Image 1 (cartoon, rainbow, N blue to C red):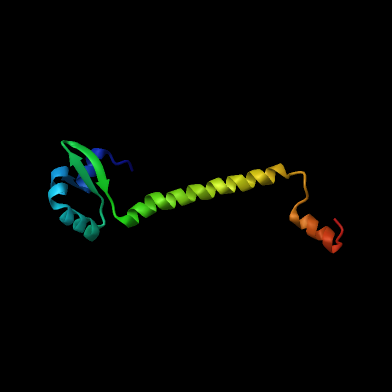
Image 2 (cartoon, helix red, strand yellow):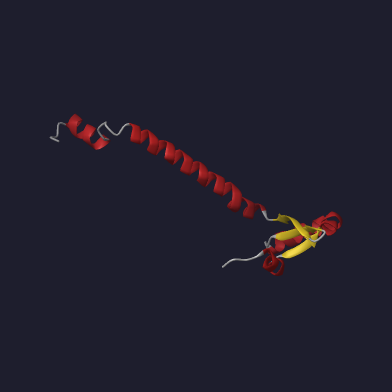
Amino acid sequence: MFVTILNLRDIMKTVNALKIRNHLGEVLEELKRTGKPIMVSKGRKIQAVLITPEQFKKRFIDYQAEEEKKRLLEIIKGSRAKRQGEKDSVEVLRELRGYEA
């Protein structure tokens, strides 16, 4: 399901920059109470979106951690590929224990 910016205005509350300037505490309290993102407009354009710290963590910090994890796994896989001609750990253990291959 695709949601266009026009539909977002129906789903999320929109406040203008002047209201933010004059009533920031109220807007933040509503954000905390509802947990729903609040779009901030200036003129007729959406300029920003306010989200809770939990939403920020979920959307950005956890995403960055997942991307870092993927990057490290690629490095590990790359180092394994370089050693392809070597014996794997099971074969080395079998040799050390005297088992036949």
